[in-house]
Amino acid sequence: MEPDERKKVSEIKSLWIDIGAKDGDEAKERVRVGDVAVIDQDVLELPNGRIASRSLDNRMGAFVVLEALRLLSEEDGLAAEVVAVASVQEEIGLYGARGAAFGLDPEAAIAVDVTHATDTPGIPKNEHGDHALGSGPVITRAANLSPVVTDGLIDTAEGEGISYTLEADSRSTSTDADAIQFTRAGIATGLVSAPNRYMHSPNETVALEDLTSCARLIAAYVRSLKKGMDFIR
Ligand SMILES: [Zn+2]
Image (cartoon, rainbow, N blue to C red):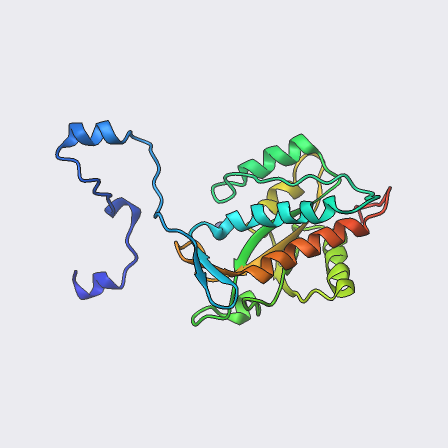
């Protein structure tokens, strides 16, 4: 590579995958146009309860919602009916969340995602806020989120002694919450995220304690809901 090429990010159109085929016919026997590929990397356990893996964004969200549901399954007398959803295609247009929100038609919803951890070099805290691995759930306040659900999440974290940090978005949040909030006549939506290092790389890194704290927060919030509660303000 020329020195200036080394500084550039590789573009998709200049990449290829060598599958070892001897000619075009053999290649076509092995793969079809439109097949997808991922960088195959197992979960790597790091010290201090941290893990590195591809697609933690947003496989960790599936864990969080199921863990919240598991915690709530041990409760009697819940006022709310709760559904955990593992939606698809958030990254390419929030499509799965759209369909799930329309189909379930809930009174309120909480989207679960990752957000940029800012405790590595080169991530500006003045832009993203201060979210270290292990600092707990990140609760987002945004024009595109319900203040009722958001304040409820904050009050719950305070009441339960769950450490958390706040993030602010002046418009939308670039998560499933954007689609859910605008489904049907509008669904009151909150957003809970876990700090994630190296976003959208094959070595995304999170702290397991943040994931369980997110689940604990969501479960405690659901537990606090009363029958007939008004999510519109
Ligand atoms: Zn993402």
